[in-house]
Amino acid sequence: MADMNDKIAQLENFIMKKCLWQFHSRAWDRKNQNENILRMTGELLCGETVNTDSPTDRCYWVDAAYLADSFREKFDWLASMSNKEIKALFVALKERMDFVTVDGSLNAELTDPRY
Amino acid sequence: MPYHEFDCSKCIPERKKHAVDKGPEDDLTKALPLGYLNTIPGSISERGCAYCGAKHVIGTPMKDVIHISHGPVGCTYDTWQTKRYISDNDNFQLKATFATDVKEKHIVFGAEKLLKQNIIEAFRAYPDIKRMTIYQTCATALIGDDIDAIAQEVMDEMPDVDIFVCNSPGFAGPSQSGGHHKINIAWINNKVGTVEPKITSDYVINYVGEYNIQGDQEVMQDYFRRMGIQILSTFTGNGSYDELRSMHGAHLNVLECARSAEYICNELRVRYGIPRLDIDGFGFEPLSSSLLKIGRFFGIEDRAQKIIDEETARWKPELDWYKERLMGKRVCIWPGGSKLWHWANVIHEEMGVKVVSVYTKFGHQGDMEKGIARCEQGALAIDDPNELESLEAMYKLKPDVIFTGKRPGEVAKKIRVPYLNAHAYHNGPYKGYEGWVRFARDIYNAIYSPIHQLSYLDISRDDIPGDGGFRTQRMISDVNLSQEVRTSKNLREYTGKYDTISPLREKTYPEFNK
Image 1 (cartoon, chains in turn green, yellow):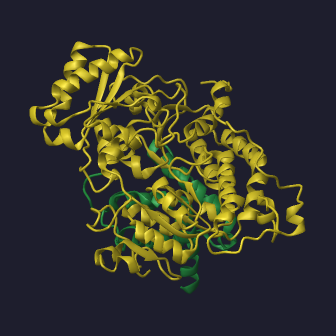
Image 2 (spheres, chains in turn green, blue):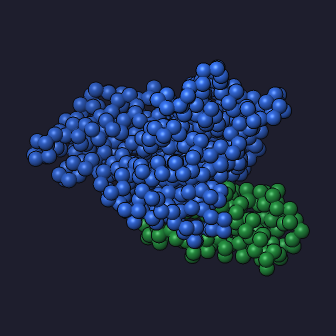
C-alpha cells in the first residue's frame, strides 16, 4: 500500500505541476475532467484503443496522450506493472484527484451553479 | 499549510485567511487563501474595478473598433494605453480613446442625448471604422441611462454600423474580475452567432484569453499558421470584432488566460459543443506540449513537432546561457490573475530561479489552487495584498527581482528591489520560444544592472569605493560561474532582433491541402 501511495503521489505531483485540466472552475466539470482524462490515460498505458470520435473525446484524449507519454518517460516503474495493476493504480489516482480538487477542496466557488 | 499573518495586518484580522505558506507535507485540502471577495476596509488594495476589467483588459484589445466609455473622462483616460496590446492595423485601438465626458448636469438631467451625439460624432470622425463598443461606468449606471436603447437607435439610423454594449460599472464586482465575467457573458449573449464564419482551413480554432501584449498573439499565430491552423477569432488581442461574432464556427477553443476568459469558453462548450483546451504559451516545455496537443487534436502533430524541433534548436542555447546566470535567484511572481500559475513551475525548471512568493490581485481561489500546486515548498501565497503586506513580504523574503504591475513595481524600487512588468512586459513579447528567452534576458538585466547595483549605496552614509572601476553585468553575473560555463561555445546570449513582430506581418505561409 505504501508503494501504491508513493506511486500515486508521484503521478499526482506531475499532474499538479504540469497540467491545467484538473482545475476547471466547477465541481461537476472537474469530476468529468478527472474521470475522462485519467481513464483514457490508463487505457493508453495498457495499450488499449481510446474512443476519439467526438470533439469532446478528442479533447480529453490529447491531454491523456500527453500524460501517458510523460508518465512512460518519467516513471520507469510503470513498465514493470501489469495492465490490471495499472488499471487499479488509475482508479486510486482518480479517487485522489477527486479528493484534492473536488471533495476535499477548500475552493468555495466550485458549487456555484452559474459559470 | 498554515495561514500567514502579516505583522502589518494584525489590525485587520480578516486578512489572515488571505495568505498561506506552502509547507513540506501540505496539499490544497489543508489550506487555501480566500479569494474573489470584497477588499476589506482598511486594506489599501492594488485592484482595479469591474469597468476596468471589462473595458481595459478584454474589450479594448479588439483592434477595429471605437471603444467609448459612457461616463466622466477620467474613467476612459485611466484605462488608456497602460497595457501594450498592440495590433496589426497600426494600433488604432491604442491611438485614440473615447468618452462621452459626462458632467454634473448630465447626472441631474440624464446623459442619453449626450451619448447618442457622441456615438454619431465618433463614427463621423473615423468613417473607416464601423464597429463600436460602449462601456457603462458607475455614474451612468446609477442614473439609469439605457445604453442598449440608444445603441439600437443609432444602429437603426446607421445600418452599416454595429455596436456592442457592456453594462459593467465599476462597482459590479469585487475587482476587475467581475468585469471579465460580465463582458464574456455579454459578448456570447449578444454577438456570437451574428456573423457567418469564414472558414479557410480544415483546422479551425478560437484563440481565447490572449491579449497580444507586445505581440504575444502574433507569435502564437505564427506557429498556428505554420501548422496550417486557422485562427477564426482571438478573444481579444489583435482580434477583429466581426471575427469574434463568428466564434461559434471553430472546432476547438484554445484557452490561455482562464481567469479572464474561461467563461466564454465554457459557454461555447455548452451552447455550441466546442471543446475547451487549456494551454500554456510560456516556457519551452509547456509551449511544446501545448502545440503537440493542438496538433494531436487535428491529427497534424508532425507539423507541431517540426516547429518544436526548429524553435528549440534555435533558442535553447540562449535560454540556457541565462539559466546558468539566474540559478538560485529569488523571485516573486506577483501579477494579476493568471501568470502566477503560467510561470510558477516553468520559470523554476527552465531558468533555475526559486519562486519565493506568488500573489494575485484579483484571482479566484481556483487561480491560487493552480499557483500553489505549481510552486515549490516554502513559497508564500497571497490573495489581494495591500501595499504594506507587499513591503513586509519583500523585507522578509529578500527577492532578487519581482514580476508585478507598475504601481507595486515602483514601490519595490523604493526599497531597491528591481521589478519587471508582468502585465505589459519590459522587452516582450514573452510568449513563444524566443519570447521566453527575452523574458530571461529582462530578468538578467534587472538583477545584474550595474546602475541598480549603485542604488545599494547610500551616499549620505556609505563609503563610496573609488578604486574598483565600473563593473559590467558580466563581471557581476559571472563571478561565481565555472570556467567551463563562462567560456562555453554551446551557450550564447540572446541574438534576436529588437523588433520581432513586424517581420511576422510580412511573412508568407505554406499552403496545406484542405
